[in-house]
Length: 354
Image 1 (cartoon, rainbow, N blue to C red):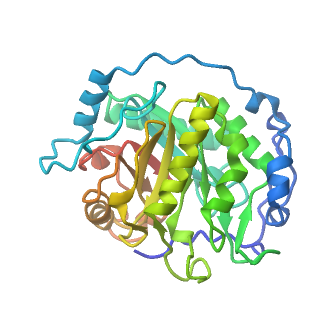
Image 2 (image 1 turned 180 degrees about the horizontal axis):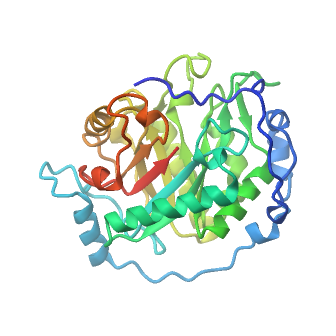
């Protein structure tokens, strides 16, 4: 699978950004984003009141019988015993999966090349997301669809930055903008982390003020975890189960501390080496783990990736990524439809569009 052409560089030509007055978006430039320090990220207060006010919600107890039924349905007739995963803990109340399928738009507000989220003007982007939600609802009427915005909050970079770690942390007011847009769309939010030459233990805690919010979830991208010091984009990176378990433990602790519903935790994958020692990945009642089939290509290639790297190494839930442009580059120049994706075993419960 070819490397995704989404490396963020401080030297690229910045697109003109619309200032969302009602969302409190900052005018901070992408160059300034690369200069964000740990101190700034942990002490800056959010100015977007409408995006950050949290009202306590009392969730009904988990219907275990219904949950088991939906997990069995998700296996889509699999007879190998892999799906659904055995001995997984029951989640806390307020859980999203498998009661709903998440359909997300992915990207970054500073670049039109990193995904649909930043490619279109906000209202047009949200309208198109609504269309995809409707498409998935029609394809599988029995499963409600939860819209989502999946924002790359820490971006692998072609520029080293002051600390020479080749990643840029996005300004907090950019995240506030995403929260505001998500609220308009009744969507949840994923904050994605590309650590590059940094590491997940340094990057994840800087986002805790957002992780404390019940509507905010986390994704990590092994492709840009460059453990051997190779610059991002020159080879495919990796995360081990130990890295993944650190994130799971961190999220579980936040859920317990703030009495939150379970967090969805996304890990992107399109090769076997991107995730090592998958059998050692630990599950918690406070999180829902999704191995998301990443990578672009023609339908047969994507089907092979799902069958070879997602299906045979079960953890809990699966996801599937669709590329509006890259998936149609080669013959038959066709992006898979919801109906076609729903032929896979198990059913993907997280769908991401880039």
